[in-house]
Every structure is written in structure tokens, then in C-alpha cells.
Image 1 (tube, rainbow, N blue to C red):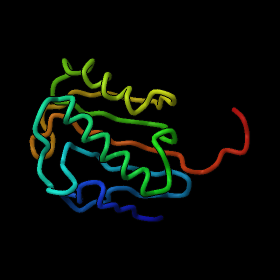
Image 2: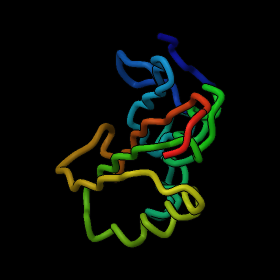
Image 3: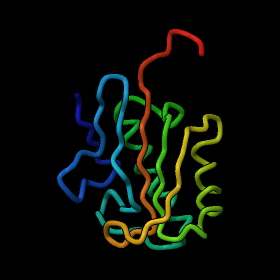
Image 4: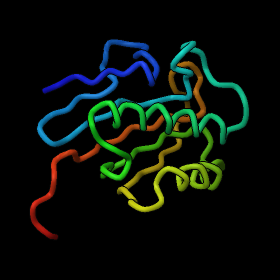
Length: 131
């Protein structure tokens, strides 16, 4: 296993890694809209917060040598499911060519009172056979 860390994403706020590369799979810890430079929550609209969250996730995937096109599964936690369509608009800016499997779940609370959290799994080995 290899533990992934990049200054382009926020430092973990607990005892966990930004990402863990295990074989061909990269497991990215849940990201919230924290500014990686200041460690503070991003202000602004829900869309701004969704973009920051996805930028954090993207930075970790790239630090492991991948790209968002290699993401195979995304789990999204939101405090208000009514923001589902707004999230989809921002999400489609990041995932348009490749569409990973995904789940979106409404939750009662998230770390630091965040409105959303996103985690992902990426496959980073070259595929040598067709499906």
C-alpha cells in the first residue's frame, strides 16, 4: 500500500490519509469544501462549495498519478437532497466523458458542518483486455 498526500488538497482533519493506493485501486477519503491553503471552509454558494470539494478530490487522484477519467465509483453525502440537481450541474463539469458509478445520500450532519462530502475509488492500472 502507498499513502497519498498532496498540498493541493486539505490536510486530513483526523487520523486518516487523503488517499490510499492498494494495488491498482486508489481509495480517496471523503473531501469537504476546505481550502487547501488555509484549511478553512470555502464561503459562497453551494456550487462554489461543490467545485472546491471536487477540486480537492481531483488533486488527490492526480497526486497518485491518475485523472478523474480513472474514477470508477463516487459516493456523495449531502445535507440537503434538494441540492441534487445543483450538484449534478457542477459534477458534470468534472465527469462528462467518463461516468463513474455513483451514489448520493442525504445525511444529517458532516464534519465541520459541511454541506457535502465526496469520496471516490479510482482504478489506476492500464487495462489490457476489453470488456
